Image (cartoon, rainbow, N blue to C red):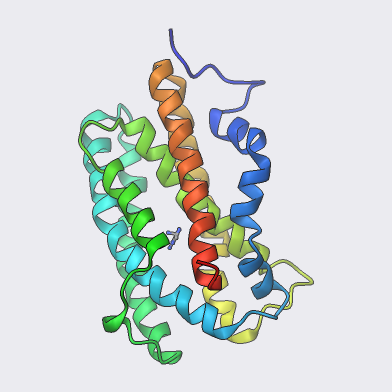
Amino acid sequence: MEGGSLDNGRGKTATWMEQYRLMYDRATRHPFVLSIRDGTVDISAFKRWLGQDYRFVREFVPFLASILLKAWKDSDDNSDVEVILGGMASLNDELSWFKKEASKWDVHLGGIAPQKANLEYCRLLQNLMLPEIDYAVVITAFWAIETVYQDSFSLCLESGSKTPAELMETCKRWGNAHFKDYCRSLQKIADRCLENAPGDVVRKAEEAFLSVLEHEIGFWNMSSGES
Ligand SMILES: Cc1ncc(CN)c(N)n1
């Protein structure tokens, strides 16, 4: 039996976001993000996030490469490769941005050791990179990873937010409309793959979605100095 029939005309991803709303909100409305939005952010926590996220994004490069390979081999839609390739191209730019931002904040990226929550998140990426993990599962995880950042940082750009001027560039990097369109493209790909996937693959994709949320919460906790 195919596992991905659309619920109420919506894709699986929207259904899961609603079904796991509490957890999704914990990942996207974390106190660390809210502290950026209300201007009370502890700058040492921001610097910790910056250094740790640089390490995470470096690990994200082989993760994306593995998805690109799976899209190339397994996808029946050529435009998937173009969307993922676009994401890879902007990672190069993102790594340069981290280096520039780190020097602005006097954060020495070379000396940063990944903390426990970061290592655990990178371990999840490594598991998802294994060749036996289905394309539908990894594209779902990828969509979730990007969308959590989009939703989190766009919150800091909403009217009425008191995001400090010196953090606006960071928030715009993931909160901007172009990044939102990119997340929507990933969501469409994930929904299409899930619609055609067998039930056990859909269940694994759901688990991957929940794992991403857990690790995102852990990452914000770590940045806040809570772990
Ligand atoms: C932890 C984390 N999650 C998501 C993203 C967005 N690529 C990121 N840079 N870092």
